[in-house]
Length: 294
Image 1 (tube, rainbow, N blue to C red):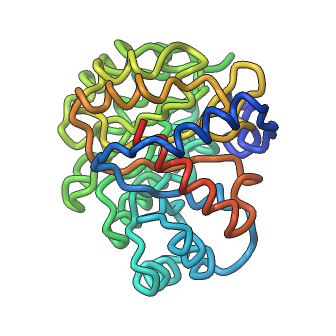
Image 2: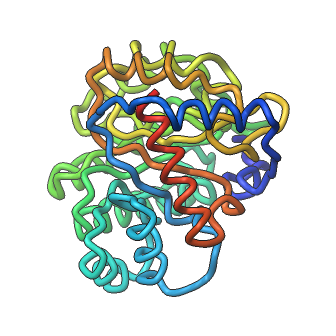
């Protein structure tokens, strides 16, 4: 994502399923499911209906999800209560300040605010029992070169590492449309520059398709993948498509994840208009089952 194309804006893109896509999904629904140790969750900010936190968590549980990815800076007591009442687990925590206060910003005060936002995300994750936080480290734009973004983000993340160590929570860098890290080798260079076992990758499968094939990123990132964002992408319709209606080659992606021995969370970041009620969440859950069985 670019700075002007915010995550929640491009997630609002809508698309319609064609006959071929529906036939493909139906065929997969009839095929035997492979067993993989990947647990299903949903990014909280992409739930498309209003209501209290607990009611939304209950809807996820009823639809067959194992967990949820809360945003940072939510009311901690509400989230803890909802987790306890539903039995859902916190798959991750998404830092809610990394777009408005990126660690790459030229202004040191903005970068400091970004560090504080990351620290709050780490504290939230500890409170909820999540093992990592999702971080978009910075943005390359007319005011920030690639090298500036790289250098500043590495420095700022290193400052926060003692907090992550004390809390026992890792920082997971996400690949997004921020004009930064568009090749798997660049991701490895970035992690190597930070040089800490506390920092890994939150691999967003849908975001990669703009730049290449997800199945070619997985072998490079390999054991450094801490979490997955699961979403479909169409080169024609964007993110406004359901699973199996876009350009994701799920069998190849899952095969690559098998070779990397990935086990853990697969977190849906679907457009909110695909999660507007319980029936839609159920459909999303079933489609994710087919993704993981591909």
